[in-house]
Length: 331
Image 1 (tube, one colour):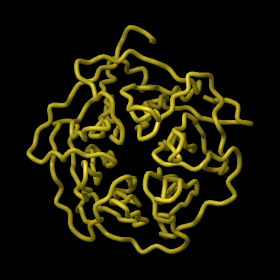
Image 2 (tube, one colour):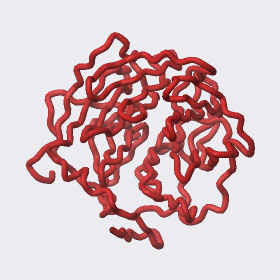
Image 3 (cartoon, rainbow, N blue to C red):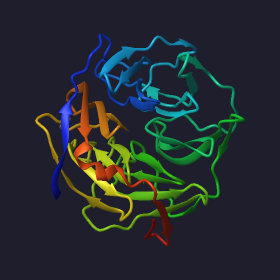
C-alpha cells in the first residue's frame, strides 16, 4: 500500500422521491454538472427510464422525457457531446439492438437520427467513445459470438463507416470490457469472450488506427463487467467479476508508468463485491451506482472520496506513446 493517506468510501444519503429501482447493466453519464442514469435491468425486467442525479445536493429526479423514447435495454452505451446524449445498442432478453437514439439534454426530447453508410450490427456489452466529432463503437456480443469489429459515426453527417486498416496487435473479440479515451488514445481493459475472462490491456491509437498490447509485470487482474474511470493520470478499476467470483477491489492503473498500483481505501461502508454497476468522476469523487453480486441487484449510490489524495487528480497533461508493444510513455 502506498502512503498513509487513504481514499474513503461512504454510502450516499440520497434525497428525492424518485430514486431508480435496483439496476444492473445500466449507464451513468456526466452531463454538465448532473449525472444521467439510463436503462438497465433488475432481476427480470429491463427499463428505459432516465434518472438525473445531482452530485452536490445528492438529489434524485425521474426525468420526464418525450419524443421517440428508446425501448427498454441493458448493456447499451451512452456518450455525451454538444448537449446531446447518444445511446447505441444494448438489448432486452433475447433481443439485441443496433438502434441509435439521441437525447436533447436541454428539452429532454428523444429522437432517432437518420443515418447512412454501414452501421454496426446488433450488439450489447460493447464499448464506445467520442473522438474527433465521431462516435466510435467497438466489440461486444451479438448473442451468438463475441465481436471485435469497430465502427464510427460522423456526428456532423451522420454517416456510419466500418473502421478498416487497423494495424498492430489486434485484441481478440470480447464484451463487458472497458474502453477509456485518454487524449488521442483508448485504453481497453479486460472483458470476456464468453469462455475466458481477460486480464489484458491494449492501447488503441486513434490517429494511426494501431493497437498495442501493454507488456507489464504481474499481478494480472482478470475482470469483466467492471468500471474504468479516468482520474488524473490514473485509471480506477472498480469491482467486476474475475471469472470465478465478484470483486470488491479498487485497482489503479498508473497511465504514466503503465503499472498497477495500490492505495489504502477505508470506510465503514463500501460497495462490496459487485459487477454490472456504473461509475463516473466529478469534483474529486467517484460515484458508483447499482450493480449485481450474483444474488442481489442494487440501487445504492457510493462515493469514493479522493479529496485527501488530491495529488492523484492533478496530473492531466501527459501523452501515451507506444513502440513495438513496449512501454514508452512520454510526458
